[in-house]
Image (cartoon, rainbow, N blue to C red; front, side, top):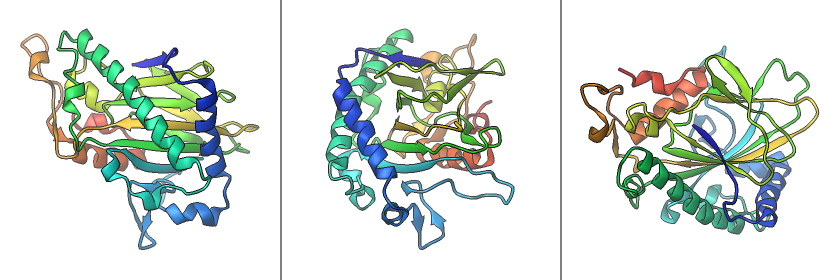
Length: 280
C-alpha cells in the first residue's frame, strides 16, 4: 500500500529547507562525510552511519546510491557522533522534521487500525518509549549507464510504516504490481506513505508491504529522505489474534523486531525479500 499525502501541514518552504540540508551534506568532501562512516574498526558494517550496503558476496552488485542512516527517535537513542555538523542547520532541521512526521505517522496508523475494525490507537499504543525511528537520507548521482544498475534494488521495508519525501525534480521510484513495474508520479511537496513488512505480518496479510525500487537517471541527480517507523527491538512480531480465524489462518511466523531488521539487511544485500522468510 502506497499513498500520496498532501495537505499534511508542512510548508513548502520548510520542506525546501529539509531537502536543502540533505543536498548540502552529500555535496561535502568525501573525507568530511566519512567522519560519520558506518564502518566499525575499518571493516565491520553497522546499520547506522554513512556508507553503502554490507558486502555478503563477491557477485553482489551495489546500488548507485550514497546514504546516511541514523536513529532519530527516541532522542535518548540518538548517536550524535553520527549526526552531521555540516551544514550547521542539519541537526535542527532534521529534528523538527522528525517531530512533524510523527504526527503524520500517528494519523496514518490510526486510520489503518480503523480499517481493521480495531481501536483507533491500537497501533499507536504499540510504539513504546524504546520504539525506534530511523532516518535514511539517499543521494543518487546521475548515472552514465542507467540500464546497468539500480539506484536501489527491488525490496520491501522492514518497518511498520514508512514516510518518504522525494525530490520534486526527478522521478525514479517504481512500484511492482503483478510482476509489472509502474512509475510513481511526483506530486510537489507530497509525502509518500507506505506500509512495511511488520504491518503486513501484524495484519495477517490484509495490508501488503509493496515491492519497490529506484531506477537511476543519466542526466539528473536525485535525493530522498525516508523515515522508517519500527517498534521496540525486543518486541515480538506476529499476526494479531483478532485477525486470525478458521477462514483466515495465520500466514506468518513469529519473530522479533531486532531479528527481522537483521534479516532484512541480509536479504537486501543478496537481492531477496525478508518477508518471504517468515511466510507460512
